[in-house]
Length: 259
Image 1: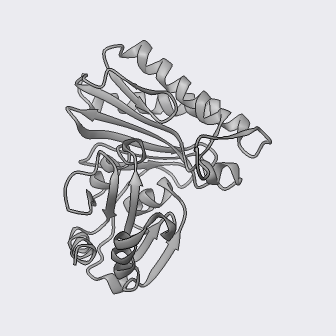
Image 2: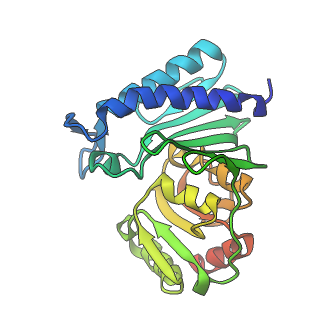
């Protein structure tokens, strides 16, 4: 079975996650804090969604590996490893904001080859295979394509919050932010999908985990964009990440960050 033939399976996984999540959105479910310092929320919806996805994967492809935010990793030495974030943007989720999503990615030989962001409240799905990308939702099905942007002065930039960056990273990020036309904060995975859809030009972040980014790489790259770490290397492991819709703009951002 080729990775491309697994695209319908992504929809099945997203359906299972949606069924587990939606009864809890904008409800009064209890919220737990996973962090020993600070605040890292998790809800019953996060855990139920990941459990539902993992059960389907294990039933259909018991030889595949799984890496998930809530229930850890298994069979990471497998050729194909699913990388899951059941609710990327839990802070938005518990605040009632619809800018969270379920991230489902597939690594083949360590390379992101399939990915989907599903937003069950809006009914939107953004999926890609690194070569092409597609949107389905209320606006109708269509191919995704990033937009051209040849200069920072024309760019729209997103990050979750400038508070992500400390010390030299903060200085590097601010060198970029000072030059862009528009900067907005928040939106987590949704911001990356807006890059793929051609509404946003770049996202810069740090401190990401693999499950925060693997699913989004095939979507953005399939739409014509680029995703790397700050040094221009692979971003699948997370850490410091830049996603851009225009490859020339991406080079400008990397040069500015590393100046």
